[in-house]
Length: 69
Image (cartoon, rainbow, N blue to C red; front, side, top):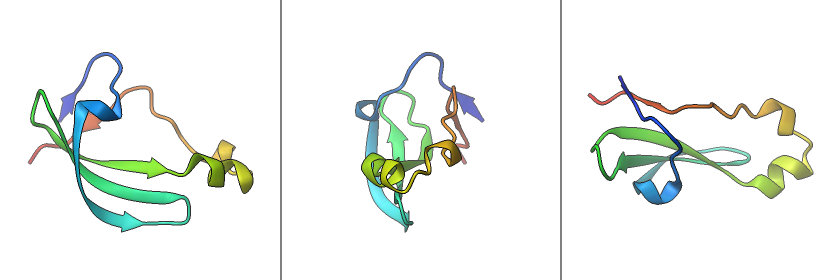
């Protein structure tokens, strides 16, 4: 498990193929550009989450952790 210190932005990753699709967005395969760690990133449609009043159901982790196998 790799833990990235500090804040990450989507520009820090090379985002690849879609792994899955849901009601509010999709999960994409990504590689951290500097460390090479691989992960899945959930990309949500913010307007849809707000429109359906699901903001409280969305968990925003304070740090990202990666399983790099």
